Length: 277
Image 1 (tube, helix red, strand yellow):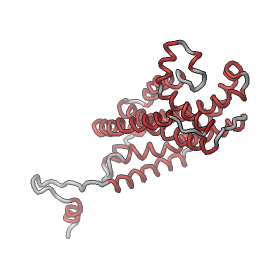
Image 2 (cartoon, one colour):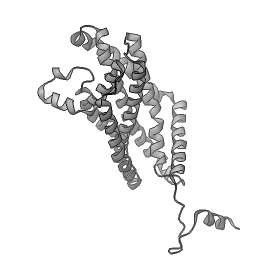
Image 3 (spheres, helix red, strand yellow):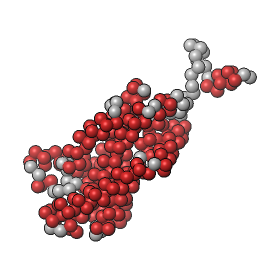
Image 4 (cartoon, helix red, strand yellow):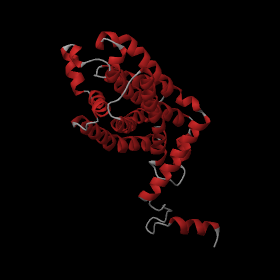
């Protein structure tokens, strides 16, 4: 058998059109390909630890700065403010880290990395999903750093198990949101544009919420927005878990929101990526 015959026999032929067609990639192979791409992303972090600088520095800066600014005014002291602040900073930092996912994706696409991936016999979703899965490490580092800084400042959660579950919840929601910023990375032509537009969307969501201050202190129109803001629901869920160890309705809303984002933006991002590529 010649090399050409071997290739034809391995991929199959279309008897009607007489053209070569690849076998369909099943779910197991798609998971394997995605895992391989995720390992590639982890290797990038290993060889370039500078990608972790923001998720290490931001928790320190946010916790120290906001506690000094708002602690006395809102709670009377920094120590009394920490149960309100640390869950809010945890959510803010993790969501901010998900923006970097779209920026790095755009940079890789501009370098032609994903064009080379498309020429390989792998699942179409593998390059995107693998890249986003690798960034889960960044969200985990951001969440852990926030907890460590909070503990160093005197924060004491009411439930250790609840705090751990809250960290997992934040990482899961940040991963789902990363698909929104990944779509921006696919649609826009420059990494700087992705960064600017993402932050423009992110700033109102994170600061017009209950992450740092009570909603009751805001103007009426801002209270209406903060009460329906998904970030407020996530922060409330984290506080319920970390402070009381209770599983309230806010957790359900946060998980439902994350699942909805994945159901909408995973196929949409993949479709736009294949079209533009």
